[in-house]
Length: 112
Image (cartoon, rainbow, N blue to C red; front, side, top):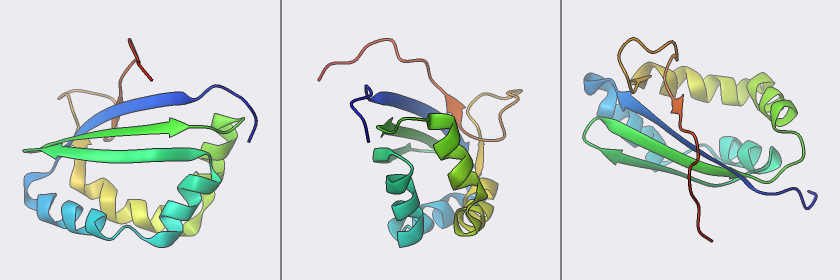
């Protein structure tokens, strides 16, 4: 990894009410391979918060080529399988959003 500045990502989605418990159970024991792929693809400090049916995600990207790293992760069969379980639990934050689930926030302020 180079000295490329850290990029921070914030995102939010809603949980499908009848799948809330399933989603939380999945994240109580995230598959080690998924965590390893996050790390290998430059993602660190990945955190998901929950409040009622809203989930808020945050992570930092410390790699050199975000799009390439995202493509590598998207092609990984184990990550694809993980997402096949988690995606049906999620809805976009806003009704009518074109996003299938997570909606990205724009960063407006940060303090180290």
